[in-house]
Length: 294
Image 1 (tube, rainbow, N blue to C red):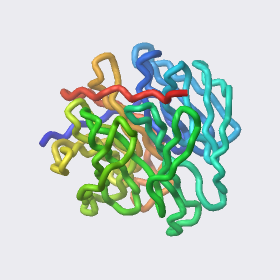
Image 2: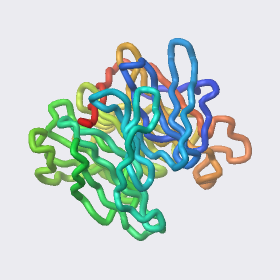
Image 3: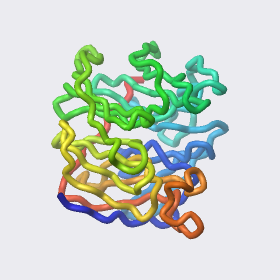
């Protein structure tokens, strides 16, 4: 096992960074600042960071097959053009006093999976739901606390999913043709790790890379749960990770400012890195995200 050190991306600080995406079309790392309502892009070649602001929270950003992006906005999803301008908004029928959208991802069939986050701690009011290209919504898991990482194996036959509060990484057999969960496998128990499992991605070998909110690490596991590698960031509240760069061997990582969970902070009175994004070069390649069929 190897430990890698992630380095800060200058001028990338935000309040609550999440929703990581590598967009090969513009060769940029894309992420969201959830409650301040930003989608941000970082060009690794020039170092430029651009911001796009919305009137609501933004919890997820993904690619559209027809160009542009799909966003989760707390109680709706929105379709944008290539400049992040909203073209259409689709309500999800959520009561923000009870639950909001959180993380998501797009499956091999081009369907969008989004999970809910409870508004009242311990209420388990979230669902894991799927939205197809015609905006039909179906619920696939209920009683969720904080839905986070979702991704698929390279052969598309295994789905990984995290409800952070359970401190487990759920694993499912998946039918990529029907875009459906077939059966549940034994989860990966990560209750021995400080903090909570948060956002996640899979690499080109189907291994998973899980950001842990509380220890400043992205931990790399095999599909059956063996710890393979660790990426260490200089701040505790790491939230999400995605592979990108020209060879898909750069891991980009988001984080949160310490005030949101000072009990986990390395040094809550003097942490210049909380809320920043980080990057690290790895010998392992990731894979590109799928695109939403809308």
